[in-house]
Length: 367
Image (tube, rainbow, N blue to C red; front, side, top):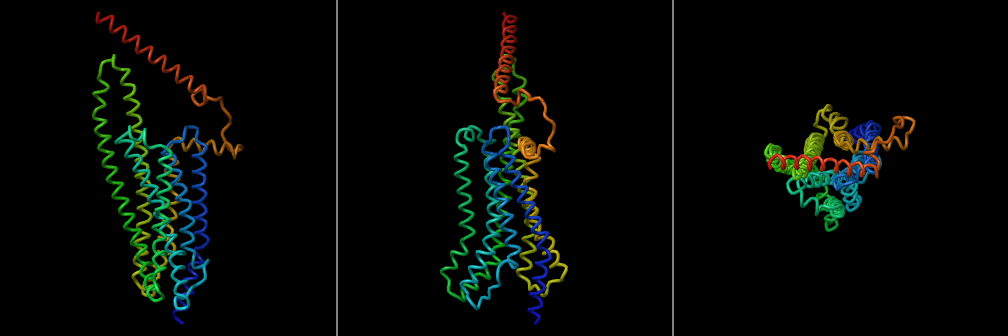
């Protein structure tokens, strides 16, 4: 009787949080879809970095759906008793519960890792990044990471095929606890790796900034060569800012997933009947919502910090919601295809002609 009352109480708690959890999931899915659509409406050419951000939006969207399924599965899926059909029970536990949790985290982890690695290579070895890190290479890497996430998530289900009935049930019960441990280890490894890459990039940027006074104090006749150095400096600054965005995304991931894993680890290793009611309420209506907040906040972070994505949002809303968009203004030459290139060409001619005139005057003074 006590077991039935406990089961009914747990079912009631799952039912009470269904609506707010589903609302949070739907909001996260909508935010990530809007972010992906804004990237498709950007005026600037889409680069490898934008492609990796698009992959992060897709990972967060799919992670929201899978995590929602994992949390509301007791209400959606029938209850399976281990003694009735051990194989069915094992596959139900591993495919219906373990797979969504592992895949939702690992897909986001790999997406952030690819972003951090790309920015590290762009800053520390810009020539290699410009010549080798093409969109085709990025798509191949993204596909490989998705396949790796699926293989890692399906490994428990593949292993259980070779187990018999009693050992299968014991294996699944142990894996219910190992899932949280594996996710915690993977999250810690990602954070440590991001910190290591950040230190490498920070060392490179500091070394480059120390050389800036030497470049600015060179004679004027070498100003033409310094133009490329200024472009390289601005490109390094942009890559460093993009890596800071990736580090911020990783910090938010760690901030929201770590309390959830700690609370889940405690509830898995302690009998739920001995846990105080306020701890159970904190898990069900507090920490269980944290990972979903992570999927919701990610598109807000890189949408606010990246100017081209903000412009993509404006163009997206202006296209589908013209009633709330800003009134039409005259198109600037700097944003109009052919006029942009003509303006850039003319400004470069004026710039180099000015440099040549100053160089000629210096040569005359030297004579």
